[in-house]
Amino acid sequence: MLELRHLDYFRAVAEFGSISRAAAALHLTQPTLSRQIARLEKSLGHQLLRRTATGTELTAVGEGLRDHLLSIFELVDRVPEVLQAAAGARRLVHLGVPSGIPAGWIENYLNAVREAAPEIHFAIVEATSEEQRRLLLNGLLDLSLVHTQPPELRKELLFRQRLGCVFREGTGPRDREQLDVTDLGGLRVMAHSAKGEEVGLRAAATATGTEVDWLFRAFSEHSELIATSSGVDTVLIGATSARKWFPAWRWIPLHAERPEHWMRTWAAWASNDLKHGDVLLGCLRETARSYQDDPTYESTA
Image (cartoon, rainbow, N blue to C red; front, side, top):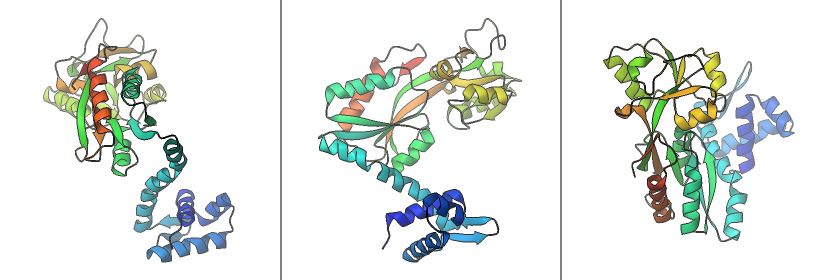
């Protein structure tokens, strides 16, 4: 019989990389934990761990189980929230949100849904577009806002935002209101990833013979520290994130004419029958069309 506690024991061993360290964290003896892991392996019919000179490592099956447990325990952790919503006759929707959404946009959307359907309540999960994709596919999110188009999911383009570059005070092009990719020649430029708009920018730079020293990093709260320690000249970023993470740097937008100079945001969902879809998607379109607080923003809904 597969028991949740056995999965939790395995998760601890996978995290600590050692049965002895996991046993100490779980307040179990090492022999007791070893027996529990052996029972789990027997129940599943697969070897999950192998002993090494430095501790314990996962087999290929063990790695697969560890990744799957991320979804299992996230669902378990949500049980009290789900029960509380059900007891209050509320309809709980898990909404994924990435960084870089225009200021006030989410609040406008939540207000629109609240007015249209007061029984709907949101549990908001902040995560990258790629993390949200995994959560959607595993049933841990109902609806997401993502900056990269997910081919295997249902999606709808909502809006786009101008990309630009931030420069430290006293650096970068002077007296310029807009930039072209050719202006990045010879600069060390930090960007979020090698996907989406960044691919288009790299292709545009190559086509014009512009040599850019690209540096791809995941960054949010410590963006300025990462940029400074990496010795970059500028950071490719949207206006909303620039104001939040680089308040003392000067942001210059890229020319509006090129499609790769824009960051797009899609609504994405996994199910063909999205719960409360008429209300949720209708309010998303309404919010996308009505938002006017950012001059670097354009609705595509």
